Image (tube, rainbow, N blue to C red; front, side, top):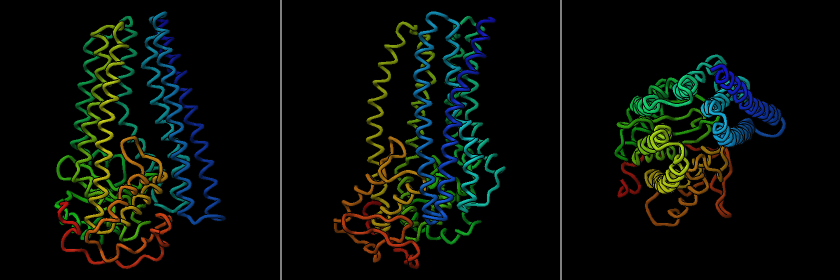
Length: 440
């Protein structure tokens, strides 16, 4: 028992220290990137250009940090597994390593928010949220990790107390609790999202004038939003999203609205309408549910079939998951291409949709050629798909051939799709029906 306690305490110290060190190095690099862009804002770039460079550096460093942490974890787990074959007490290090990785991720998020993000928000004058408010929101997001951390700690303690054997009820309890919590978070998605993110009904903000325009576009597409929420500026979250299994709620980011003109805003609304019509929120929920079920049920399955067959079982399941992932990825990529097409045909302005996709990527710290995830095509891939309908005959808005005011310049061959952002025009009247009504 004493040996087990020493392994448990030593494992916690070792893995927490390793993953925390990785997190601190990442924060230091992000702090340096911010300081460089604050200087560049004065000497080289406009404030929004400097912000885009900073967000891109921040995103790149975070991705490298996560990749290094996961590689470290994937090296540690097999080593611990082999060590436990010689010293059974070492099996408690398996969940402890996962705890250390989780702790590293959240320590990075908290310190980055406190040291880097709050300074960036004020340096680039994105919002007036206080450091305390931003940290409180970030701490709330950490609460979401507590169930997994508690489960992993329970596994380690149960292994220690029960002579390195897990009883089946412990193995089956977590899948039930995890799946139940996932369903609850999805059913009450807006409340959970608002608990972690500063939201405000758009009617109570300076963007209230957009409500009639949003409602008109939604009506033309046969969609009705339960509410329209404005997400106050957070670094790297310039999105237009949909939340809700039933009547959807539209989430718009304030930074995105501030740095887009009315044509891009119409395009963004069209993309959000496409997300609602394709039920992307439901598709993501089902996919996450299957992944969570596999992860949480795997220990119970290993316990039933024995460790001897565990590796073969894991290999078979991983192959099946790989095949399922390829099918899901292909379907979701096709869905996003359809969403962009819907937005273009609804608004009659494919150029604005192409520019809006690029703007969302730029403000989120993702280059046009980089995917936000393996399931979502890059902005460049989506723009290439939209090129097809540029050369097809169909009714379009009167302004569709004009360059789009944008904070970033985009070209298509020898043709520029954009013009300076300060040359935005007055909004055009909305049509009485979609420009390509047969799609809806």
